[in-house]
Image (tube, rainbow, N blue to C red; front, top):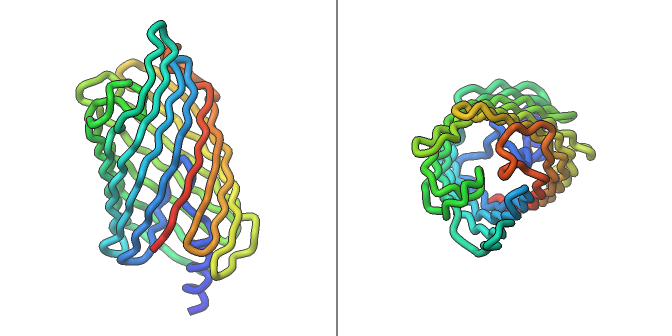
Length: 251
């Protein structure tokens, strides 16, 4: 009973990574409504993605989700094109197949799939609006304790009608600043890396995000800034920075 109590406190003390994902799942029947706005500035222009995301756990180790994004864009070219559009809708599925809990700590593994529908305008901006069907499969492993959390995701994103297939890795470290309490009241720092190798064009990008998250009760608020460390992608698609602002509510 003591072990379960400590683990429950630890699980809620650290929310999910801001720009990544984690294998920790909540209880059966849980609904999570969330958004994570990205404001991305690139050599090509400025793009804003505001997704409405709904996640549901029909059983303890299965999660399904629907992401519907609103996109605003302003392109830096001679025409100065700008506008608002529906982005690429995403269907999410996660299955937790391994779980090992100890007092105040846990290790878990999850299989993940993300199917991206070509509902968005063909802006060719990865992760925001491409207008191409995409199929992602990945594996997430994570360790979490009362003192810190580590998550690692490795997956492949297949884009059949474009040359942007991507081998993607996301590595995140979470550091809670307050002692675990219930009801939840926690401040977390996140240090997150994303490595993207575009296998068909042999382009590469390494991004780093520094974030902060505040959780109280059923609410979570978060913010992060992401900047490139390495980029060998075409100059017009290279990123200057991304700003993330998010909120979530757990039912």
